[in-house]
Image 1 (tube, rainbow, N blue to C red):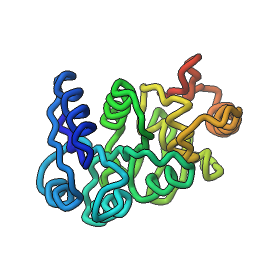
Image 2: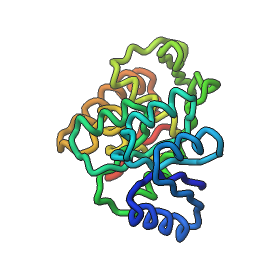
Image 3: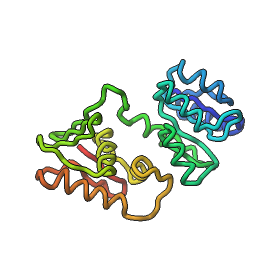
Length: 222
């Protein structure tokens, strides 16, 4: 993968660049928002690592600019700000993931790989299908065996994320981050409860299980 690193701290930028190269990837490191806004729309990057606190412009504002310019490259926001509001703001601005410093490179690299495994959110991919289950992302209508399935908002988001990753495990952490916007584990059964409700609507009435639990990991559809 080819990664753009936007980080004004030279030591951190070199650490990330070295780690990616040792993993067999390529990386370009820039230290300013201006450089990032110039390069990101012009070159093909597989992912962008964006520091939150940058001179001249907040990283969140820079991400908004890129998204408005139709740059759809997956972005991981990297920051020392660990508050829930900060994390939610980053995700709502258009970042795909949010990591707090200090961080382990192994986790960052795993998250980069997870982002690239996800089904692209392109305009052409409007209908997701698994067996006789269909999800229309334009109308947000879900059907199974031709029958409409009424889902609550978070049930729909869980199903959409599962169907974007057919055959791959979607972890509890991924669900907490992508559906609830949590960058931490609240140590509740909130995910299990919502997945159980989703199964009761999508699987149970049709006698064929599509959503399965992967013990100790998460859930998979397929």
